[in-house]
Length: 413
Image (cartoon, rainbow, N blue to C red):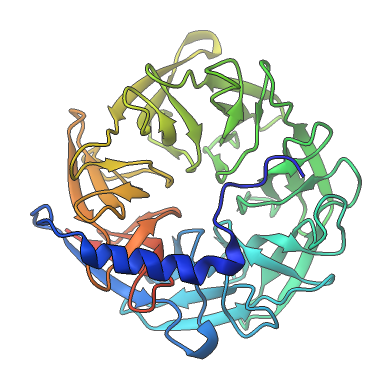
């Protein structure tokens, strides 16, 4: 199997998480002051056997009432503890909507974010499981639907042919006619991933096969986003013309199905590389995102892409992360912005306790650390997408918390 996602060895993760919690208690410096307050809304693995889930990789989505939804890679009441879909009220009451179970007829180990429709159904993807195992003995992954009562329906089993995409780690975006669009991390004609369309009836069409060479990106990890014209935007971790072995790309798929690369990441020191978080659009059609590597100090960047004449796009690096005392570095998540134009995001490492940060970048490009993770029973190592809802910022951490299995956190301004 080529280029498996760069994630921890899953079955041995509990020991690693406990080690992170111990290290967080050892490090001792004062945390950055500010008017904002961080609250741990929920610590996973609070129930016996982690029946409530563990390691919430995907991040969160929210409904109009302020309820939060997400998935965990592990935990639940399934045979192997292979993840859950959960709901969390604004006050922190968790309910498990579904426990995933390993097996040829089931998807399991969900990683990508969920999608919610107007009827309250949730849609997502699993990294493993399903009927096919062309590349992965444990299954090439699935797309699923969860009804409001938690009943699961498998919409599609990836790996249906030798050139189908496999390992759909990014979740799916739903469009007005009910179709879904998403990416697979590997698989396809060139084994470097695909962009696919999936109808509500489960009919899949591969729209693009990534080549991972000087003409194209490879290994898409982040969720797709859509503008009001029906155009899709996403990123790849590798490939393209920039940097050694390709620093990744930003791409567009138009509503008519035309694929093009908007930017090739050049990597250290002039540009970022290895984009992992989903993009964000503003009202002028500019794209914003973060890269895990690259930049002036090799620790990642926040960037802006602005549309220009004749289909051109211009990139601006808004911030270069640096590994200095108490600084934040290696951003995995998306960025979101408020009405004043401030950008918010998280980093996987750095901060006073070494376990990651929540940051704000103002329109002048100045970064403020809003919260440093890792002290006591706080969360550690934020990874998944964040959301700004009802004036508060919400996200998840992969580690830390009261039971060292990750948290959902809230930043109140």
